[in-house]
Structures are given as C-alpha cells and as structure tokens.
Amino acid sequence: MSRLLADGSEDRYWMIAEGKARSYELVGQSARLRNVLRLASKLGRGNWPVLLLGETGTGKELVARTIHRSGPGGPFVTIDCSSMVGPLMESELFGHVKGAFTGAHSNKIGLIEQANGGTAFFDEIGELPLDLQAKLLRVLQEKEFRPVGSLQVRKSSFRIIAATNRDLAKEVEKGRFRQDLYYRLNVVTLRLSPLRERKEDLPALIRHFLELYGNGHTISGELLELMMAYDWPGNVRELENCIQHMVAINSGPVLHLHDAPSQLLHFHEQRRRPSGNFLQAAAAAAPPGAEGGEASDSFVTPVLPLAEMERRAIINALRYTKGDRVMAAHLLGIGRTTLYRKIKEYGIRD
Image (cartoon, rainbow, N blue to C red):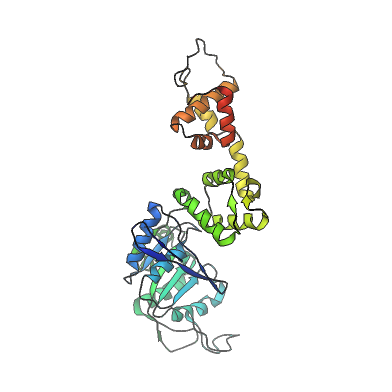
C-alpha cells in the first residue's frame, strides 16, 4: 500500500504479522506526524543511533521500521527487552555454544548476530539489566561479542535504534541505566506525540482500522463524537483494539455507542454527569446579566436556581467556543443532542 504525503513524497509501510504480510501504516496528516516521517526518512540515509521516546502504543516500532526501510537494507531484528527475563537473556542476545549450560544441546545464533548488516531495534531498552547494558556498550563500540560459553570472538555491525517510554536521563541519575550507554544512544532523539495531542489524525486512523478489520462497517455520529473526545491513554494501540472489539461484537454495518468497550462507556457516563465539570465552572464564572445582550436582573439572589445556572453555563460555553456547539457540548460534559434540546428549551439565541 502506498500513499502520497503532504510534502509530495511517497511512503510504504509493511509489517509481518502472524506469518502473513499486511499493510500497516503510520496514518495521519498532522504536522507532528509529518515531521516525524520527514526526519525518519532523513535518518535512514545515515547510520546514526536513534533514540525513540514516547508512550506505549504511539508507534515507536513503526517509526523504527520506517527509518530502516529508508536505508540500505539488511535484516530488521526486534529485541524486546521487556520480554527477556532470567539467566537466558544473555543467550537470547549473544547466542550460545553447545554445552554452555544445561539444556544447550546445540549452537544458537543470538539476536545481535542476526542483526549484522542491518538494524537492531531495542524496544523498551530501559528494561535491560545493568550487566547486559555493559556488554551491549562493548558491542556498539568494538563491533564484537562472545556467545555464552565460547572463547571465540565474533563480529556484528549494525545500526541501533532504541525505544523507551521511560525518562532515561532520570534513570541514569537513579543508577538504573548506564550513563555511557545513554550518551551512546542519545545521538538523535525523536519524540512521538501521544494520540491525545494529535486528534486531527483520529478520523483517518479510524477509517484505516475499519478498512483493516471491518466488513464495510461505519460508525455513528454519536460514537465518533465520543471517540474524538476521549484521550486514548493507550494511544493508537488502544484505538486499534477498540475497533477490533466493536467489529467483533457488532453484526450490523453501523457501529453504535453501545458497541464501545468498557473504558469508552465509562468515559461517556462521566461526561453525562454535570457535577465537577465545566457546567459549574462556567456558571460560576458568568457575571450576572452577561448573557450576550439579554437584560440583566434588577435583583440578584445569593443562590441561583439550577436551571438559571445551567442556562448561563451554556451561554458562556457557546461564547467561549464562538458558537461551536460540538465543542461546547464537550466542555459542558453533555451530549450534542442534549445541548441542542437545552438551547431550544431556554430560548438561547446564537
């Protein structure tokens, strides 16, 4: 699959999933994403170490693959540091020779050797133990290593791309990450924005995942409004899982609010509660008689009726959003249809 970016360049993203090739794009046209793609394309032409920073689910591996595809080629080897535990971690990284330890019935090539001539992507590198950090540093400096149980030195030269959701500078201060390795990795840093900071990409991402997992499915306007308001703490990965969930349980062509997973339904219920949201704050901030040209009261009671508080809050929200009713409903914590009904009920003029 290919598409044309805003800067006129063409991009292709491919991922092997469960033994079958399928297209997997860095979808969106936000300025933040376009900047990442532009830098990734440039970085692929060199061999500099790259450190990718970002929350879980922001697409760090996709960016790493984009950098790799922009380069000369070779293997792309993913090393998930969070999944390697116990005494076999060193064997996974560097391999071992037959008889090196109980159960080592044959020689094994490690991930470091597999990456020779290509790219080694160290995902969640902040999880790597200190002793292996020291050995990795030597590989990066000397381009050589020894498999477990072997006296023979082997060579491996590769580009390293590391990713983490931790603040490695703070990890260095706490003694949990080697300072020399941090400086070795922190040559070029790319920070990936969470989905809540680039919501303009949400509609394109939703369409992409509906095309990938759906069967002609679409989503209702009410559900789209809720998804646009939600902050997606799990980022693109959470959005993907959400679409899969709704497609799996819905037999019809249109996905509705009741098809949403529990976290979205819980968020929807919270938005419907007027307490503690913009409704009270806007009503409290609205001065008496400031309702957009309406006559002020000749007498102000110490406590306003709830209906009057609600009316003033709606007027204040509409004024703040310059008449954008969808955004005003979001700020007030109520649904769009509810806002329309109340505007008519209170006789509020645009």
